[in-house]
Each structure stands twice: as C-alpha cells, then as structure tokens.
Length: 211
Ligand code: DX5
Ligand code: ZN
Image 1 (cartoon, protein in one colour):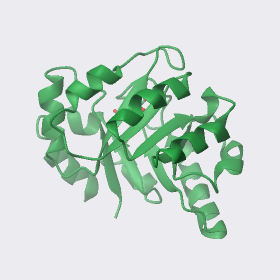
Image 2 (cartoon, protein in one colour):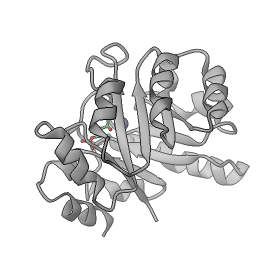
Image 3 (cartoon, helix red, strand yellow):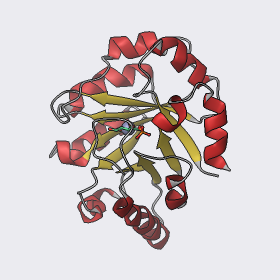
C-alpha cells in the first residue's frame, strides 16, 4: 500500500491550525520542505518555526532539505527526531560523511535528485541509504506541474532494488494529484502538497488520491 507524506508548503493562512488539521487526517508522514534561499531561491521555515508549528502534531516527520549547508541543517533538524532526513545529491560533495553522520543518530537517510539529475549519479549510494526521493518538479515551489519524464526513474530504481536486494524506499515529490499518482505506482511514498491543501476538506482529497 502506497503511503502519503503531506507537504504544507502551499498553506498560506492559519498555518499552525491547518497543519494540526492535516495531522489529524490519515496521512502517514508530515513532509517538511526546508529551503535556504541558496540551493533554491525560495526560503521557508527555520527550526524554531517548525518546532512551534508542530507542537501539537503526532505524525512521523519526513524532512526534505533543499539547502547547501546540509550539515548545519541536519544539526538543527535532528532535534525534532524525524524518521527521515533527505538531502540533495547536487548540494554537496561529502555524501558519505553525511550518510554516516545521520546513521549515528539512528535517523533514516534519504538522498534526493532534481528532475534533470540522472540515477547513475546515485549508484554508489544505493546500498547505503534508506530512501531515494525523486523530484517530479524543480524544487522550490508547491503547485507546479508534474514532469512525466521523471517517472522512468521510479521504475528503474525499483528494478535495481529487486535485482540487488537493496533496501531503500522510493519516494516521489511534486505535482502529484489523483491523475498523476497513477504514474507513481512503483513508489512506496508519494509526497502530496497542494492537491490536498488547496481544498478545505483535506481528508476528502486524500481519499480521492488513494482510490
Ligand atoms: C517542492 C517541494 C514539494 C512540493 C509538494 O520543492 O519539495 O514537496 O511543494 O507540493 P505539490 O504537491 O504542490 O507539488
Ligand atoms: Zn518536498
């Protein structure tokens, strides 16, 4: 059964109250889109803002770092004890060091690639990591259109996992709605933002995704 990680990036009003509403739906994870204004032009929440926002939430947290200074943000975000921290392959050169660092804290390690980055670049890390995040839009903003060409990466990563007995989870993020989700069937977790949060009734939107 495919799991849903919900992004609240596109919620513009009453953010805390609406994140609490999202937390009460059937979603599996809360997806935290963390942007530094450098790796991507947009800038989002600080760790202090996230702690305040998530004060009353209970879902496991899935952190998506779209930042250059990966180590600094990891030190911030390990303090909320997330299930996953995912960084971008394109952001750094010391991937192995970061993987080992997160493992010391018993946090599951994810690596993400942008739509134009091919999966060959991930090959050395496949045996080492817990999650791969395939971006199906350019990172930076919610509400963008799903890039269909990225779906072959999902299928290829599933094939590679089966062939090599790797253990990573395959996650897809960006532009997912009740139509485009059909092209993500080989993913284990889909990240969904605006499709859920653009309507008042979050649970109805989630149910439409899964049927
Ligand atoms: C984009 C973010 C995504 C995205 C999800 O940089 O990583 O999590 O905002 O939102 P939708 O579903 O609106 O594309
Ligand atoms: Zn994201």
